[in-house]
Amino acid sequence: VRFKLSRMVPSLSSTVNYTDPTVEPVVTENSVIRQKIIDSQFKCYERMNRAPPYKKKGLFCNRTWDGWLCWDDTPAGRLTAQNCPDYFPDFDPTERASKYCDETGNWFRHPESNRTWSNYTLCNSFTSEKLKMAFILYYMAIVGHALSITSLLISLAIFFYFKSLSCQRITLHKNLFFSYVLNSVFTIAHLIAVVPNPSLVKKDPVSCKVLQFFHQYMLGCNYFWMLCEGIYLHTLIVVAVFAEEQRLHWYYLLGWGFPLVPASIHAVARARYFNDNCWMSVDTHLLYIVHGPVMAALLVNFFFLLNIVRVLVTKLRDTHRAESNMYMKAVRATLILVPLLGIQFVIIPWRPENRLAGEIYDYIMHILMHYQGLLVATIFCFFNGEVQGALKRQWTQYKTQWGQRRRDHCSMRSTSYTATSITEVPVYLYHHDSNNEQLNGRYIEDSELVGWIWGNPSLCQRARPGERTHHIQTASASDSSGTEGSDADWE
Image (tube, rainbow, N blue to C red; front, side, top):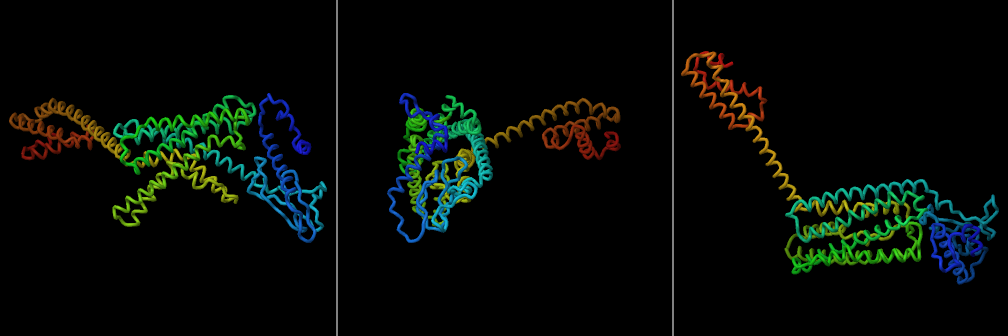
């Protein structure tokens, strides 16, 4: 087996040290592929030895191992097929590999090489389309986390600015939002600095593994703060008696402290037993050290969701409302709780084998995973009635203050115009009319008119300074229509 595999992949002995027990194995991508092939070949020979002989009549092709897959006994003239192997990054396990047994009972031989040949062309036939989809999903992830960070920071600013929103529930929301922000920051850093940089992965710096450690830690924090939200909601709705007596330091310990334990254990185990470059490989069971507690938290939240919905439906039934209204509210509450508690990973945990269904699954999962921060911020901040009320009050207060400043500014301009009118009007009147009694009457009327304009600032808002004279002239002319020649003199 070692000899045959070394012919397929010549650098077998140069990558993993099998002889010196003091040297820790350094796992590379090629060594992982080779190990997969070795395991598959060993299982194939075991299965061929255990399987009973072929008992059907007629010619058939003997069971065989072709170097990648194991093929059972096949009747002559039959095409057999199975899923492609997952050894290589460009192989799609949902596609099919095939092998033909001809009418003489021999496996098909390729006409050029005259060797038995298995058809693996479909395994990577859609490589360009898959590469395009991979880029789409890659940028979807980056954009989703960027939008999540922006919306979460806006939500946190709102929570910290409005003191009227301070309560235990909002405090938990703040910590949950902080965990989303940090998780998105480390995810973007990993996607930008590590994933598209094979030269960095090949160098395998310590900083790369430290980034992966914090990425795993923040992933755990994200889901355990979801668990904290679930525990709080369950206590608030189901055990409402203790709603005002919850101690938040236990939530801090669970949300920020506990995820450090599995992340640290995973880092030590990864460095000791599966020390691949930048710890990027997912072909290791050591990931269950982190993902196991995450799945446990999600299952507990799933129980909380079911119990909360049960209590909500019971309360709605006790209020004697219409059945349709009752179920609509229950569904609405469920839809609000699902993105918060991360139940979508429990509802759809397996990827379909069909290619089109698998692509749809990938898009849905990317939206649920990478846009979850945006969704949570929208539902629990922007659509929150308390937050909307606080924003409306702040907006009303701003409009009131802005309107008051405009009125004060208009009043100052009116005061300046009044002083100008008092000093200039008598000069015009003395120049055009020597009747002192009529002059004094006109002077009194004009002063009262200025005072009337001062008390009506809307005139100031509708007219420019050059236009106010026309309003004063018109009003003055109508008030003194009984004075002969005074209209012309005023104009």
